[in-house]
Image 1: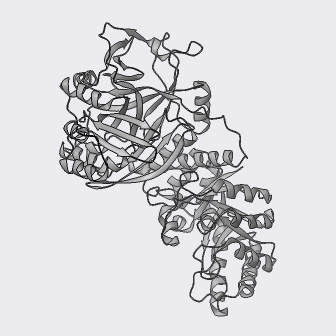
Image 2: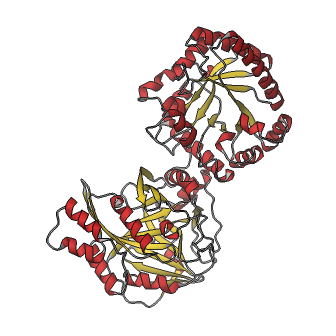
Image 3: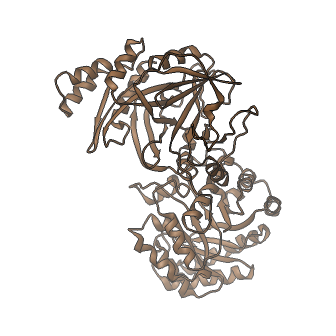
Length: 608
């Protein structure tokens, strides 16, 4: 199906928005009136620019407060409409959006509304233009799609149809049954379909719409279900995005447009109208790669955690550290750091240790790469020697390199074979594997990151969690595979200028967090110090065996419990922009100790 995007969904000048939409692969655009009014280009120049970019102008919008008004007001509306239709003729747009009225002058009179919309359609038809009537969720008298359709049906004009908008419909919906009436509308009378998702929020619908819409798959609406209903009517127009979002309007237009197009590709797959390469969800974390200019602090930290330096890459300054199934690569060569990298408090780039890449154990790396490429994930060029394993890598929205790989599987290229073993003492056995990797995101790419990991990698997105930080609010949403062997909590930090708050961390699973913590401190390592008040509160909330809470207090171990199990965890100090966590999961605990995050964040701020 053809895809389109409203210019209001992107940041920048109209020229920048059109260029971004074309480069992302959209077929057309909706031109928002404010974007045209602010452009130095004439309508003819905009029309030519769109033609040069291969974009059709699918909709001009919006016309407001037109119908069900007193006769003298409607006469003024028709004069206004004539000017707009003349402009649209110059622009080359053949469909105009008319929103249901919010004017205090509007009467609750469907017959009057139908009659005046029919007159408007008469005028539009003279210019070869169609009128798409849309019910705003906050319309004064018309606020539902079925009511708007009844008025359009009563008008009975060939140049008058309806526009369906997923936000206006789903924000008012109480369940799937509310969508059944869509299929009663003839497909040829649905002149346009606008799509947006949104998080499920309890707030005024106008403010919800104006500030919190997002692309399909990033919120809580069943947009795919709505699209299925619409397509069953025979609708054959474009799938178009109309997203009002404060973050998107401040972010760079190019990446936002790519994210938008990716959302429509995934939506079409979910609605059953486009076939994409099937997901090959990762089955584990093969390795985490750290880039550093000084390997000594990282090596000391890894040694204290029980890792051993087991191998070195045959042609690159990369060392492999292992413990159980947990593997960390330490790269001391030049590398492109993720684009989220901040400046330190002194204003110079922070060139300390950074987590830049992850190896994802894939059941079918080639299939995973094909899906990533089909969903517009940039495939990264890789400098490698002829004898190196051919590994596909794609860039996540924050710039993190994701290697799609296999470990010691004879039927597939083995990344481990690129490393030459070095003499080493046996590693400790505290860490079983990498439990999870917390990936801090740029504030303007959080929703994009969730959609990327869900749609491209085939992971499941959990509920969003807000955590109090001493300097604001931290938002987190985890993505996981089915059995929890891959877990990535995606977070947006609260303090933009503070590296500690935005450091990433690697959580190591252990069967005995107390023993692992003791061995780390005995090796000279320092665990994050947790305030005594935290343990006083634990004593009030939970019952512990004699001496158990004292042990946690002495070592800085945090504790959480839910209906399924128990979680014990502790943190190292930060090296550069990376720290480690030791975690012990007992029973069916699946979370990340979110209740303890404010205490951890405060302790990290204090330890700066």
